Amino acid sequence: MSKIDTNTKILEDGLRYKSKVAGSPFKCTSYMGTNTTMSCLMCGKHRERSFLAARKIAGKNQLCCAPSCKAVDEAIASGATKIITKT
Image 1: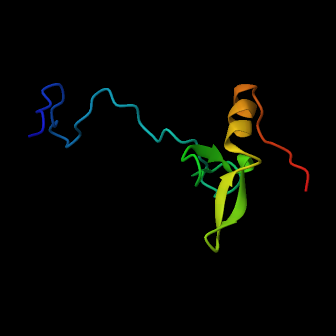
Image 2: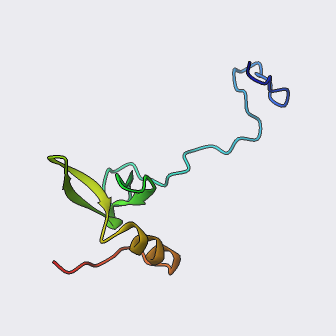
């Protein structure tokens, strides 16, 4: 059985959470452009599209961290906003 939550109540206006932060944890804009986030197929972390590149996996193009998931983690830790890769 699930544990009954005694800390929250459904209010008269239908809202349940008094202290829940509004909005999404993923930053986005109204335009589906470069500031949107998507998840990497390899590591599963949400990244900005500037950190992702399309790779052909199982016959389909999938978005993955580019050049690698480890390199993107290090770049984000150092404050980078995008990675420039040589093609």
